[in-house]
Length: 292
Image 1 (tube, helix red, strand yellow):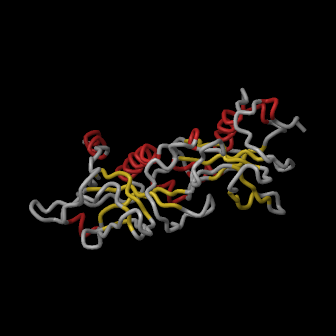
Image 2: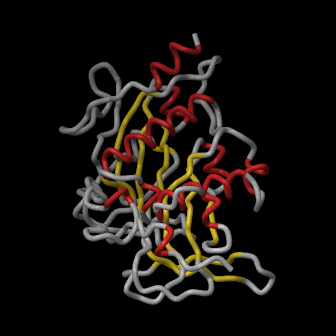
Image 3: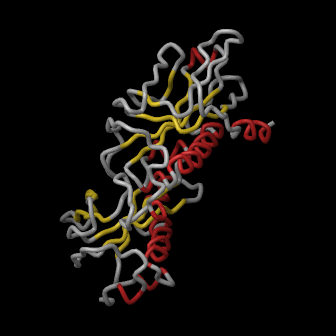
């Protein structure tokens, strides 16, 4: 039964055009893929479903709609359940396809929206995947925007960095704040790598399924995973070649999002003692400062 449930959960619902069924006829309802919404949400019902044109001010855009499998007792699956985790995986893949690049490489947040409990009890079994623009890597509250996100990252090489054609949403060169106790503070995104900086977004490390507490350790698996990501980004053969030359900073998804299934860790390269005015993408060992 479990295998059949997961297979059903990952069904793609093709709703590229048209509107949504308002409950007439067979009583079914399915949200519209590609619709934009004035406000972001964790759940949604038939009565409050009121999409707007993406050229109007909005906080969320639906990039995929799928079928959600009920819990064993028929109830709506709760956050962190296998059904909701699989829904997030489907949304993760769909968001990258919709954008034309990795959504975590940009000022975006992905949410899985499910029917309200009353609508679930009426028979609604959909989930929808909504993308929202955010203010930066340190934020998760939506920023109202106009315009669709479809193909918004298609011209961004690798979905990241500051190479030509980078989307205005994509992370590129950064500045990292170091606190007096040596801890890392906030991350500030820059519009251009021509501006003096000392850090750069390098990509995403996909963590294995483990406890959030274990992942958070400063010298734990997230650091090792991001060191490998940074080495690839710089075109450095081995992560060990970074020692004494490049520091690595990582940003975990919030714990609630980790519980929902997000396993993407953002990786940042950091040269705290060097002022840069260009991207370091692909520079190779010769383009890095000497080891200290």
